[in-house]
Structures are given as structure tokens and as C-alpha cells.
Amino acid sequence: RMHQCFLGVEISELGSHEARVFECIPVEGLLQSELMKLPFGKIGFTKAMSNKWIRVDKTSEGGPLIFRSVQTIVDQVREKLLNVLNGKDAELEEKEKSELKKRRLLSEVTVKSYWITKGSSFSTTITKQETELTPEMIVSGNWKDNKFKPYNFEAMGVPLDCGHLHPLMKVRTQFRQIFLEMGFTEMPTNNFIESSFWNFDSLFQPQQHPARDQHDTFFLSDPALTLDFPQDYLQRVKKVHTEGGFGSQGYKYEWKVEEAQKNILRTHTTAVSARMLYKLAQQKFTPVKYFSIDRVFRNETLDATHLAEFHQIEGVVADYDLTLGDLMGVLHQFFTKLGITKLRFKPAYNPYTEPSMEVFSYHEGLEKWVEVGNSGVFRPEMLLPMGLPEDVSVIAWGLSLERPTMIKYGINNIRELVGHKVNLQMVYDGPICRLDT
Image (cartoon, rainbow, N blue to C red):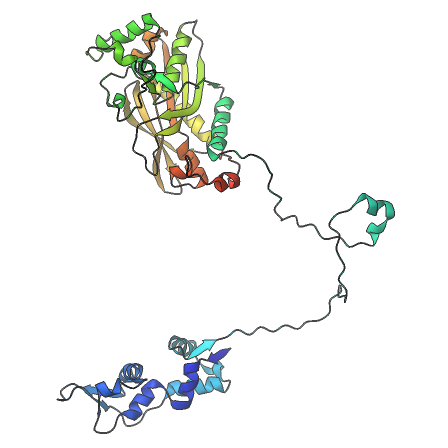
């Protein structure tokens, strides 16, 4: 239903702005400056010019003069508003209605009406509905006469008054279950403090490597050093660094035990893998599959995607004559269980793996390939000084726990996932994590 606005009522009585401007212009013309002083002058002048009812002579000495261009006009705006006033708004076309609405001369009002009748449950009294069936009702038989409130099976239950797992722990549980399903054994990772020897030197990472600098590593001041090492293994590691061996030329530098003794916060859980492989080499070799999910520490600049403390997921397989093809096969099996089926591999460099590969997955939402992990085959310079047989190969891969958790729960800033800015309501409301398989 169309309804005239306040301005529309005025125009219905006095005429449109443009028509009133036309009527104000005498035969000898009217100064534009005088016209603009009228309350309807500015809008009326624009509309009248658009309708070609008037013209402007800018050659006049006193300023622009306005003259009529036609002898008579038809005020269609007023006629349309009068039709609406007389209930003939159905005759207006949609374009005409839209133009009048745009000028705030007309508004459209929706009127709804209802016909109310008595229903089958009509009553002049209010009967209280029972919400539960009690033993007393059953014994007395009153339940037959009582009215019960229908169950709302869509209603939310009362939140349980209990603890809530952090999203990181939910995703960690899923990753751990996948490793266990694949027959992996979890490594002990409760030593956050590690010596530079196990964190770097045992992995054939040179002592001049940039990662060992204070810009990337947290060094401890107390205790600053570790003195307890397997001496025979320490000497073999020193030799492969300085002189080479096992088909390698080494790094040809002066290896210092003082550098290896420095205590740090571990920069990766591969230090734990090195300890486990050394322990494995001290007994008769049997193929193994290890995994770990725990915290590591990097002296990095904090931003929306980086923290100085994060979690690393690592998988290690040791067996006879493993190849790069075996690594790709295990990676396909592992990521398929995560719901990731489209994988690509890109050659990369790591000091302790050769060959090395970055793992990319196709992200359907972003419609592009994104990096999801790193992988490689441990170098002989790392494995043979431990005492492992020459025909034993070790393949490994790793990724962070925070990135898949942020993707799973739609978190853009890692500081909203870990640290003092975490919203506890997010922890309470976080759904159960189920990685698509």
C-alpha cells in the first residue's frame, strides 16, 4: 500500500517544486540568485532544467537570468500524488513509484490483517502443564488427567560443570591417535633443556651454523654446560665434523667440545630422535617407528603466526634399505589419515637430511598449494657414528601443531590460541576435534 510522505502532501496541495519555480518566473525573467532564495528554489530549478521548462541566460549584466522555455506545463508529479491520495496507486508504474520514493514524496507501507477464530484447545482458564512424570502421579493415576508439556528435542542442554580441553590438546590427541594406528611408538620428550651436542652436533649440524646463534636459540646461564656425554660417540661425531668419513669430506673446521657442552632450550624434537636412534644402535638392530609431539623453543620475532614457543610433530622410521620412495609412501599414508590427499614434494635443504623435501598440500578453500611439513632421509654422517648398520636408513618428517589447529578452529592470530590473550570462552565453546579421514 502506497502512502504519501509529509512533503508529498504539501506538493499535492501546492504543486511540485519544479512547477512552482516555473510559475514564479515572469515574462521578463528572474535572477537565478533570487530564485535560489526560495525554499523550493534549488530542487525546483534542477528538475525544471531537466524537464527543459526553463533556460538560463548568462549574458545578463546583473547575473544569470532565468526565462521560461515553454508556455504551459503539466505537473505530472502532483497528478501522480493525487492519484495515490484517491486510492489509484495501482495505476502507477514501478519506475514512477521508484522515482517518487527517491524524492521522499511517497512511502510504501505493508499492512497485515488477521482473522482470529477459536481453536480446538480454546479455554478461558490457564492450565499448568506438567514438565515431568513423577512416581506419585503413577501411583495415584493423576497422570491420566494431567497435561504434559511437549519435549523440545532441539533445546540445548545445560553446559556441564567440568574442565575443558584446550583446542591444541584436542588436535594433539587426534595426531597421536593417527600415529598409534600406524604402529608408531611415542618417544619420551620431557626434557625441554638439551645440550648443543644432541640438538646440533649429533645431527651433523656445523658449529658455525646460523641456527646456533643467539638470534635463533635460547641459551641457559645456570646450568650453562653439560659434561656427561658418551665419550666414544662424542669423538666419532667430532671426527666426522672435522675430517669427514663414511663417504663425506666433513666440514673441515676446528670442532670445539666447549660449544657442544652449552645448554639450550631445544629448538626441535629431532634432538630426542637422535637420542633414541643412538640408544637403538647400542643393541641388535630391529626396525622401529617413533613419533613425538611436544614443545620446542626458538628465539624468533613474535607476530600473528610465530611464537617463541610452539609444538613440533615428528615421525621417524628406521629400517633396512629405505628410500625416498618409502618416505613419500609413508607421507601419503599419514596425510591421507588427516584428510589431505593432494600432495606435492619440493626439493629442500636440511643439514642432517639428504635428500630433503618440503611437503605441499592443495588447499581447497584458498585454491592454492600450501606448505604443510618438512621431510628427508637422515644423512650417513649422522647415523653411522651412532653405530647403526650401514644398510639401515632412517626417514623422518615434521610439522607444527599450531598451524593445523588454527586452520581447524578458524583462528587467524596464534596469540589468540596460545598465551595470556586466550579467550577462555573459546576454550569452553570449542567443538570436539575430528580430523577428516
